Image 1 (cartoon, helix red, strand yellow):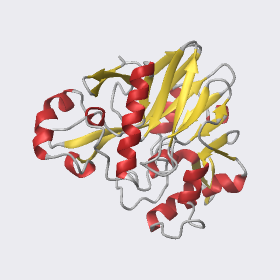
Image 2 (spheres, helix red, strand yellow):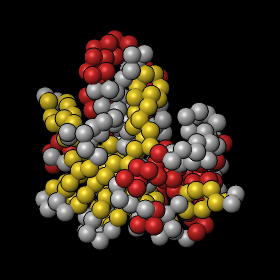
Image 3 (cartoon, rainbow, N blue to C red):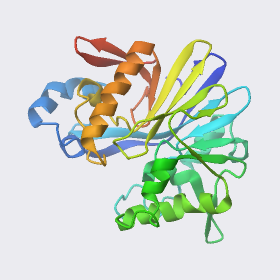
Image 4 (cartoon, helix red, strand yellow):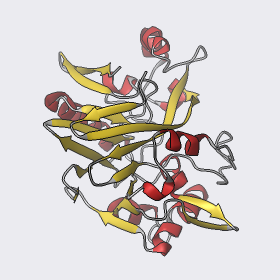
Amino acid sequence: MSLTFKAGDLTIHRVIEQETTFLPATEMMPGLTPEVLAENRSWMQAAKALDANDVLILCFQSYVVKTPHHTILIDSCIGNDKPRPNRPKWNMKTDDTYMRALAAAGVSVADIDYVMCTHLHVDHVGWNTKLDNGRWVPTFPNAKYVFSQIDRDYWDPAKNPDLDEEARMIFADSVHPVIASGQDHLVADGDRLGDNLAIQLTPGHTPGAVAIRLTDGGQEGLFTGDVMHHPIQVYRPCWSSRFCTDPVQSADTREKVLGQCADCNALMLPAHFGAPHAGRVRRKGDGFFFAFEE
């Protein structure tokens, strides 16, 4: 299984921080009934997307896109030294897995020109910053960090006083230091980054979540972030995860994105699908199925 995809003159590398069990399937997907889980258990286990105890297996990864002019990191995973008391596998983590994976892709932190966050949840902003002499500072010193204006405003405690303590902590250690450094760059639906990448608003999981559309040489890819967490949602787009701020809008967005990928034959690159991670969406009757890219 390759960690690299090609799209025209662009190269896409996966940088994997963790591939692990996460939550029981029916807890992660409130719409998933035990009966439907039983119907789908065999293929999900064969795809290593479900363990023997019906716990979903998710991948936590970034994508590095190398264009002729830029090196771009899409989402920055979990991070080290971050206090995450509600998430034991992430809490005060100190391993070197992510940095080794970045190096294996032939990239150093100084090489990254842009860090593009599909949204500002904990597992997409973690390596935005690192701990340096007791202070959080940007990990990628030469990068502009690309945030959706809508999402940045929603997760800013100064603008949204209703945020819980965990969300405030994540913003404080992984987003605010980037803003304070002047390295943030705010975008909206339809904005472009160079000739190859465009921002596409995909609200529902969070209010300002975005997908990142890649085009080159007649080929198209779509980095979908958390439009979907798991392959079961390709077959049942109506199922939103427990982490979606607006489950109904999330389901509507998911249906539209799946149709878009099917109609354009786009390579879909989700944030959390397990190996081999990416693939093509195909229509089947009035629904969809997912063909993993080997």
